[in-house]
Image 1 (tube, helix red, strand yellow):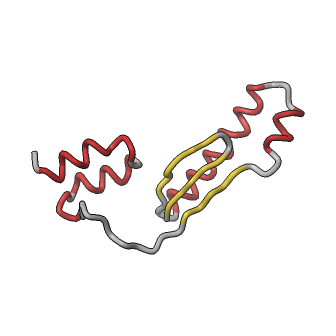
Image 2 (tube, rainbow, N blue to C red; image 1 turned 45 degrees about the horizontal axis):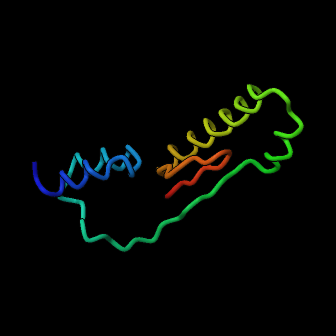
Length: 96
């Protein structure tokens, strides 16, 4: 296994799987020293979510709302070629 591939596999748990797959398909494209790029970072969350959770007593309903939101966001992210960096509560961080 080449040195670059060892690094990629070691850091794969910190990278979105889509990025890891792209890198493993063509390891020569990776620049271990980094690369300067202009990107767009999107932070999205459900407006008024805290108030909503205080009003709704059914945790399953809250989970359903968050899941529907994330599923719709994932469709949009995939459509426009973004990569989800993380989910946190009702928030999502995406890099385009």
